[in-house]
Amino acid sequence: MENWLTREIYDHSPVFLQNLYASVYGLQKKWCRYRGEFRKYYDFFAGAAGWSLADFQAYQDEKVRGLIRNAYEHVPFHRRRMDEWKVRPDDIRGVVDLPRLPLLEKSEVRAAGREMLSKAVPEGRLLSATTSGSTGYPLTLYWTRSAKQKEYGFHWARRRRHVIRGDSYGSVTGLQLVPSDSLKPPFWRHNWAANQTCYSLFHITPKTIPLYLEEMQRCQHVYLEGYPSVIAMFARHLLEQGLDWPRPLKAYYVESEQLQEEHRWQISQAFKTRVYNMYGQAEFACSITEYDCGHLHYDMDYGVIEFMPTGREGDCTVAEIVCTAFDNAAWPLIRYRVGDLVLIPDEPVQCSENAGLVVRAIYGRTGHSLVSRDGRRINNISVIIKKCRNIEAVQCVQHEPGLVEVHVVRSPGYAAQDEENLLYQFHQKMGEMDFKFVYLDGVDQFERTPAGKFLSIISRIPPGQRLTDGVAGP
Image 1 (cartoon, rainbow, N blue to C red):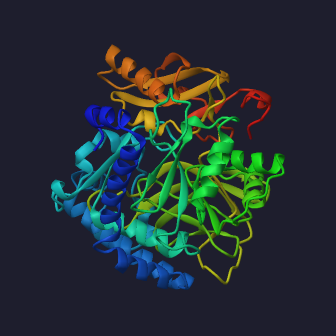
Image 2: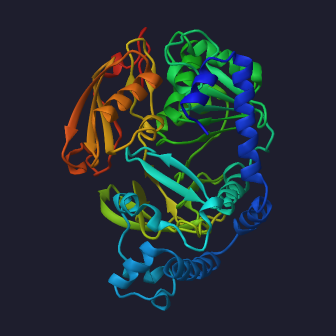
Image 3: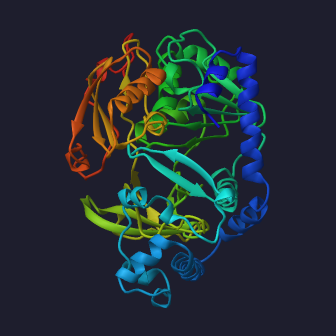
């Protein structure tokens, strides 16, 4: 677990030892993910891929009944809410009855704290982490080990069907791998336990991109994963310089960000590969996956999604995603608003590969980024926000490289040391940039997209200035 001492030890260790630390951490994650019930879930999801729509619906109804009963009997928060709404477990017979319960807001989950935890699961057996995802809302998440193994059983049975565990792969990560003020390579670290190379998100500039690409070639990666807007920067460099990628990737897997069609084309052309889109969350609440058919399918065996209409776009309905999560008995999420939007075509698409509803597009984590004076781009502030306390939410707005307005909604107890820590965390990840703090009275004052989507990063930098040395951002 990271704290100030382990951070100091890591930052002041030679690169070889940092690789060793990363590998020990990777080994711990490997044990947690792939022991226990991983194989059971892998086999289940591999087999369920061919189910009919009726099979999926029957399975969902069965899971919902068990989930609601467990939540009522063992989770104080859900029992109180159901009593207030005069709903009993027997009233929820399946998915169709879920609207009898209220929607669950992230702010309610934060306020409820440990009231959300099941009394039937000893706290010593729980896994937890703090995240803000793309929303800028810090949230502590809880899982059982079984829930974590379910996630990775699904991951390898359905999202990574074209590769195998143990293949060499590269990840563009928001982890603090390299000190922010270091402009000397390597800007990556190796997790030998998983045959993974983690590439720092915080050191990518026009001058360092060739170094990243050289390392990717040296490692002979079978596939890449990470932010599409970042991988597209590498792809554009290859295309603009007329460089040939000598070893075509088996796949590139989108993570953590909305995929733009321009980025899909650039990545597929430069790396000679197929791009696979997906949608998920750190809460493991629901899943949408792009399969070989080329469609994005709602994964009905993973969890329930209610598509709540919010508007229209062409021949599609814009719908908000509301999730009911399966297989995490310790921390049930029922009718949970994750804050993301999708496009649902008016005419249902029939597909022989998967019976789940076809989604036209995901309006989730858009590829806005912060730009430093030396051209570094930062696409994710969750690694910053999750280390701060007494903060309701954060949104970063940038009008020029090197200067960021940090809009903050404070929680009760916020003090001068919280601002100091927030500034320290920004500098740790981004180096010498200037930050101006603007305090808002509530989350309703944050800027949103025309569709109502909240973005944790809003860039108003003209496209030609988003990267220095004449390389424009997306």
